Length: 224
Image (cartoon, rainbow, N blue to C red; front, side, top):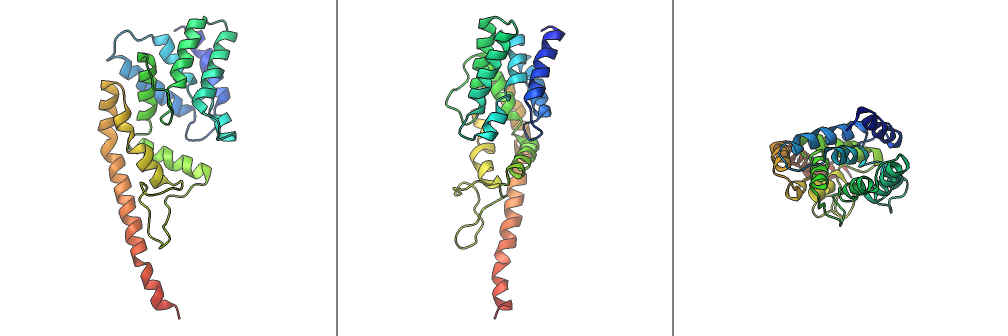
């Protein structure tokens, strides 16, 4: 990819980003991880991959403003239109758009091309390990979501039995399951090397919170 093309795509990406857990540094981490994975794969179109990585989250702002929207679908359309308007071939724009539309964990559009699979893995690796923990906590705070929820008896819900939104729920629903979703051998290797740190954090936090709430019965002796 020519440097001028990279700068064009990068500039557009930066104009679309907010300062949250899906900020520009997330984009660069995804890009660098994708380039790592690409070294272990054959027949990767580097231009498509780089463009898809840079533009994969440009629909985040729209989804944040309207949660009914899917940022992957919005971003795919925005990317396609931007590329066409800036003189890129339809085939290239469509390939980049397809990668973006297939990168969402909660989506029903699995990645098919090697570039889409690499983008998917690279994006998911950024929610693995301690980076994933940090980003999830940051984003939950940004949205005003709690760390955990309680049942009717004031017992801590671990996440898998939680119908509300919380860090514990997000860990059990997404962070814990992301490893089985990965598409590439190198992607799985990177994610697996980070897995234990995330598990240790969740287990330690759960243990500490549960231990604290077990002492709630002491309050009864102070109330008359």
